[in-house]
Image (cartoon, rainbow, N blue to C red; front, side):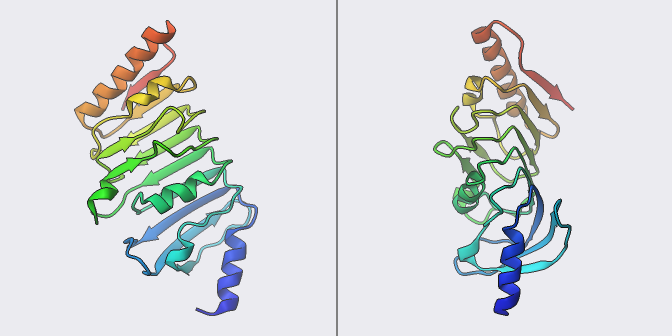
Length: 201
């Protein structure tokens, strides 16, 4: 790759952006494989391009992002940690994904990871079977939107998130609905009020 093009691309990706929507095309996490990122749209400076990113630069996002949408990806440890480094991120949408490459990518474990400012999370068609989280993972979490039939339950630790107000369910397994209602019931019993709304859409 031309070094001038690479440096220019890196500078633009690291500029003071607040919104980024990225679609990852045929992203398979093999070591040393190059990754194509396309359709980067920034609120501050709209542009569309295809950038070749090496594995060592995997998911290096502008630090000031508040809104991030990613389509077509694996929830690898590298990706999760890169997103967690975005200390101002409030809104995260994860869409789609390719068939499972390795078994460990079927579990999204953020038990020891914190998303300090995240208020809204959307999981739409994400190919995970299991989701693990602690109450420290999402300290100011308010709303989650689920549109996937792959995973089986919402983490029980969500009962310990005092800011949680809304769970939206679109396409889901029965067990996901059961887990959502169990969380709602436990919050009511613990707090003495109906603070969590579960919408089945």
